Image (cartoon, one colour):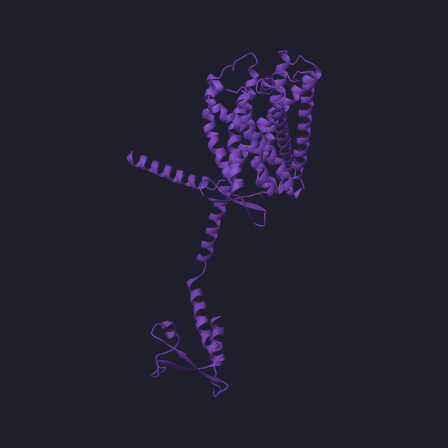
Length: 450
């Protein structure tokens, strides 16, 4: 039994050591997502168990609240990890890839370029988001789940704005750099214009009518209404930027799902095939996230209709349905995509280590098939050809045409030539070896060995 436990301890130690080496090769974004994806499950426990209002009559709204909170954990971690990637990024392989330094001081190569605009505007967007979050707190905005997380809820609130605006600026900047697929660039532009137009239109209605054109839905439109109750005009900037960022993000995930469909339908678009081939699970997860997001949005809309919560004017109903669809798809697609991105990173490390292993095996097998006698033959050939090369450069012109006298310097540290010559050859006082060989004999000997 003691040997069994010792063996288990040894195997577990080897597994942990191997896992640590693989984890050390992840970039900062994937490291942060992997770490928080585990810690975040623990943070969800008090949210599910002791959060007030989770078992109200509109219980189906919890289907968006819990994934949204868990997704915000991963988004916060992912964007701050990406920020560190941007700060340490250097071009690699003719700007086709990027070399970065991760939290564990390892040089990592990520399989995508990072443009200049992305490096500049992503930190600006995140800084603007932090400022906006602090601004909302200064207005005494209602903090979600304060009763659960207490002061940690302030940090989550500020980070939420940082990720929303950081994501908006990141998508626009990377589209400007040309590092995204054409379909993604078009979708990001359409989402940005649509989100900005809807946000400005709703804010115009708010100014003209004095009422918010939204049905108060927990986790979707209620945070905006809470801000509106604090201050009508100071609410404008957070509302417009947040709705624009969420809409742009949602359309980005729509584009990823569309590109994945093209990929599995065997498209001839080389850029789509190359990108999804390198990030398969990221795009597949975005596709699945959009499917579940649409199902969740449909369930919430049906539930609100059955409970009578959607009894309002057509504009209010349309705005509420738009917000539900955008929010549900953005939450689940973002959550699934980040987990898929983590899987892609882990599998990439596994494939790289597997390739290195096969490469070493190939080199070992290649050299193991080389016979020792073949190496000896090559060595003898080089020794036989040495006198020929010396004879061709000899300055003694008094030698016969068919016979060349070669004179080689021999020292006590050069025994390699001994096996070529017999013991009857003479040595003079200068320790020089004289031997008589015809040029034809030397050439015939080298031809025989070949």
